[in-house]
Image 1: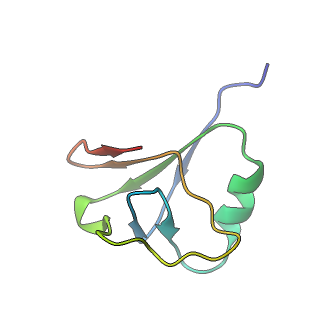
Image 2: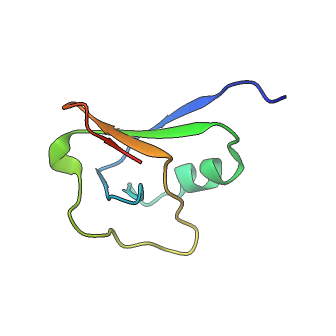
Amino acid sequence: MLPLALALVPGLAFDAAGFRLGYGGGFYDTFLADFPGTTVGLCRTCQLSAVPLPRGPYDLPVGLVVTEDGDIIL
């Protein structure tokens, strides 16, 4: 059995599908590809995008997004 693991993933913005706009280095996408635990994007409500964010072939979504208002997007 794998140990429980949680990754808090930062982003400049998140969309409803859990994709994030980052700083362009690709670090988190590389990390998320092999991470076996739960991934959570933390952001303010104003950082939620009403439209899908641009995605590349290596972009991966987080499992859920949580805002300061208690909104949870799965």
